[in-house]
Every structure is written in structure tokens, then in C-alpha cells.
Image 1 (cartoon, rainbow, N blue to C red):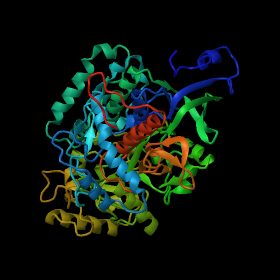
Image 2 (cartoon, rainbow, N blue to C red):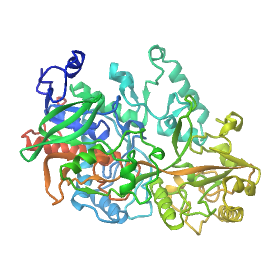
Image 3 (cartoon, rainbow, N blue to C red):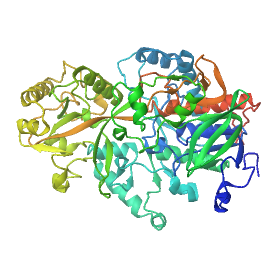
Image 4 (cartoon, helix red, strand yellow):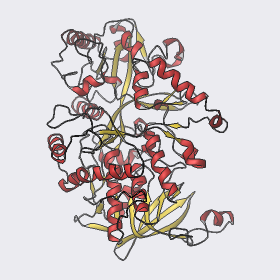
Length: 600
């Protein structure tokens, strides 16, 4: 066995022998990574590349974490890919303009400096990242750009071999008819019936059904896209390097010996045992959005766990609680990565509902979002995190938000999705189950009748819609500036004139769906420094303990600067953590076999 192998009898063998496992089994690795999402995968991959033995511990029965279910976008300023003229100075100028509140300056600069190094490392491993024209979320800020968001190419899941079906699967919202994978371009084309949507649909269907060899053993589309593609690329390289992933292992506590973190106690179906680390433990186990008690403790408007769009009951803050138990400090725990969501029944399961994101739906033309007094509260076409902040602020001000309402007309219904309700061309009203009407989606021939159904004052709603119709005519929204910047316009309808984000709401019938204060996770967690080292209450690093991703505090504080603002820093600080562990262990980066040296 190599240095990272199990030193005693394999746990599964012992369980079959029926012997007690409490503290009898001891595993030893150079590095233990808690959590298998983007941060954990990068920390493990970089550590393995630097010659360290690594194990990834994941409490779920599948690997990939929340990242595998996401859009898979990385926000990395100054990424230095082809034709990118961004710079360190421009990146910091933009971040200085949009980030408010207390942050760690050294940590922010570490992200800006090491992000391009992380991208270079991924490229050196053969992972081809591509820049997208996605505008930064504050396009009017100094040095804002539209090329800082990166995506991975489609990945063939069969390259993972027998582990293919163990990678966490995408949500229904990212799959066509809960079966067919879509990349981001296809998703936006189909959800808005954009140019070439029929060809895109035919291509997706043919690619799936012509793949007879995969259909012989799984219903799952082997074509992995978005977050699944990112994680497929990373785990292909992890498995090629012999990194082990231990599934169904829940973190119970951090072990401390001699003033340093020396390992972890995990439980496997209720059986606790210890895993020891020679050089470091990297906590990458996500936030606490599925822990209602922690939401009530930290968030000003806590909302419900079930409104989160992350995997159900996954991120419960075990890492945060384990860190607090040994004296770790926290930061930014009052903030979330907000995402407007709506819920509807799961088609194939009785008595279960599924959460659907409405990130871009709320800002499409021929619609408006109102609180329960019938009044607007935000530029609906803004970034989804800012939309959520608007919901929080309005709830604190009026008590009449969370949920709010997305109100739209038949033109919107024919062209755009409303959460899980696809455009009428794909999902006509007649196929929506009768029992869903006036519960999940509401419909009426007049605005007054719709207002009565959703219990919003009719006079206020009709006045709001009248104002929106005037704004659509002039192309200017004097209340909130909807459609007045490049980001708003990017997700509008270019055929809608004079403002692609504003369209009259006047074509009956009229519809409404409730919008919840959902999230992509929490922004706060263990306080980590520029080297990803977890700090104690005095601001001193806790030896051998690191954190990255949503298990740590966001380097931007309560700001979401651009698409991929969660995964970009998660990958970067996983990379940084591995580098610091390797440096302290006396390991140095080695030139790759292809002859390409990588700077740290």
C-alpha cells in the first residue's frame, strides 16, 4: 500500500466481520479534505499533484457536492486566458468599488493574485476553460468587464468508469424533461425560445437516444454539462492520481493533539472512527443553509431551509460547528448567496416538492415583481443576489415580502420560463395538472381577478402594472432603472424595443407565481486568512486547519461580484490551502511530465 493507504484492516471489511469500530480503526494521510465539492476537489487535486497523500471525506452517498449541481461557472478576474486584457489593478479597482463592509484585504488580494495561478494549474492538467461574455454583476462600476466568468467544456461521464453514476446528478431545472443534459447556452436558448431552439432541442435528443451503449446500463445522460462537467474533469484527474473518496462519512469533530489539528472523527452509518493527518485538514463542507437553527441564529431574515436551491439536507454546518468547538472564529455568517426560487410538485414522486431557481425569469420583459402590498421593491433584472438582498430589505421595511409575486402576461408565458414552468411552447397550460392551478401558478382574465386570487390589493397592483407599461413605452424605469445597464440587457429580449428588459403587461390572461427567498448557500463560515488557514478568536491561525468554499467566509464579504463568484474563490482557496500545506511539509511543485513547469 502507498503512504495514504489504510494502515489497519479496511473499515468495510471490519463491519462485515461484525466487530466494533469505535476508535479501533485508524487511517493516516498527509491531508484530509472534508467535502467533495469544487473547493475540496481542488485542494485534494493540488495536494496530490504536489506529492501528498490525500483522502476526501464526503457525508453524502455521491461525490461532487453542491458544485456538481450548479451552473459550474468560475469568476476569476485577470484569468490570463486568450485575448484577456484584464489586470490585477483593474480587478482590484472593480472589487474596491463594489465590495462594502469589513473584509480581509490580504485575503481579497490573495484571491486576485492566486486565481490566475489556479486557472493555469487547471490548464496544465488538460482542463480547457473558456471565457464567456457574461457581464460582471455591477456593470456600471469602474473596471467592470464581461469576460471574467469561465466555464468548462462538456465532459463524457464514461471517462469516470464505474464511478460515473456516483457523481452527484444535476437538478431537474438544469435538465430538459428531467433527462437530457443542457449546457448553459442550450439552457438559455430553450428557456427563452431563442434563435435556433428547435435545432438545439433536436441535437440534445439525438445525442441522448443515439448513445445506445450508455442507455444499456443507466438512464443518466453521459454528457455532463455545467457543474457536473467541472466536477467530472476534476475527478477524472483525482482518480487518475489514486485519490480516495470515502462516501457516507459524516464529520463529527476535529481532533486536536499537541496544539494542532491532527485529524477528524467521522461516522459511517452511525459507527465513529478516527482519520489522522500528518500535515493538514482542509474543511470544504459547504455552509449551513440546511440548518434551520443556524439560519435563525445568524440570518436577519432566515427564511426556510426548504427554499434553498442546494442539495436537500446536505449543507448543515457540521464543519462550522466543529470549528467553533475548538475555538475557531467566524465571519460573514449573516449573509447568503441569495437566489429567488419557487417550488412545485415533483412529477414522479407523491407528496414531494422541488425547488426551481428563478434567477433570470424575474427580470424578463412583460413581467413585474411586487410585494404583498402590490408594489415593486427592486430592479427585477438585477443580479439574483441583489434581488435577494432587495427581498430582505423590503421584508425588514414592510413585513410584506418573502414570498413576493412574479406577475406576467400571456406574451411572457409564451416565451419565457417562470421557475419550473417552461414556456407555453414547451409546457402549454393544458398539460399543467389541474390541482396545480391557484396553488403553484395562478391565472385570471384580468389583473383585478388575479389580484383577488393572490390576495394583493387590486388598486395597487393595477397601478404598478400601469406604471410598468409606461416604462415599457418610454424604455426608461425611473423607479429602479431596470434595463439601464449591460447586465440587465444581457438577459432581456433583444426584440423588445426600446428596452429589452421592459415589456408591457397587457396581454390577457395574466399569471402569477410566488417567489421565495432562496439561496445558493451561505456566505459566512470559519474565518480563514490569505493562506486559507482557519483563525481563532485572537486572529491567530489554528495550526494545520484550513477552510475553503462556503465553509469559510466569503472573501468579498456580502458581495457577489460576478457569475461564478462562489466557485471561483472556492477553487482558488482550495488551491491556496494545498500550496501552504505542501510548503510547510517541505514539498515543492515539480515540473509536469509534459515539460510544463507550474509556478506557485
